[in-house]
Image (cartoon, rainbow, N blue to C red; front, side, top):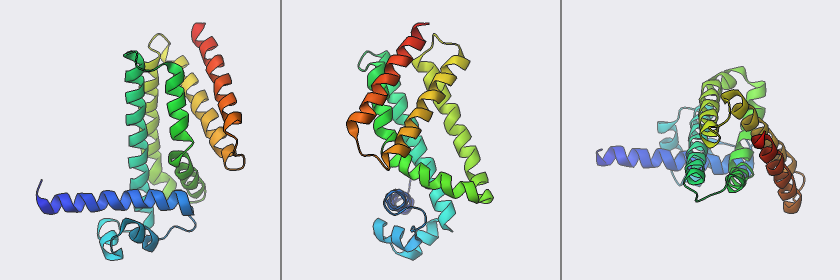
Length: 194
């Protein structure tokens, strides 16, 4: 890759990272290209050279965030199979990620997509691909389960964690959420033993 291409790619990545920081910190309503440019320490012209509008920027940033989650989850599942991590530790890792930037950014984007059909339609293929990857990884975690069963348990897990993420906006109580997660681990272990 040529130097100019590397510089351009590095600038794009800085802008994408900055957009995620701004989206988490400020919310979509307060997000502006000027704020993102400032956070990325680039000119607004540099930002608009790479991204034509806020929706395009946020869609691509979301793609990066989801891809990173999938990669982290894949590493965790590989660690479970290698004996370096337990299934419970894997669930803790998923919660760690889901209770941070990933969930808060996703929440902002979901609310926008709920009211803007064009924005939503741009995200649907991205979200579908994300869920296909999650299903594949979850099946790797529990290869002894029928695919439908593994998928159902994955969806229950993700929906529980999303609900916990939503509740964490109003309730900052680590022990409460740890108890919920511990209870889910027990339920999941019972389901896996069936």
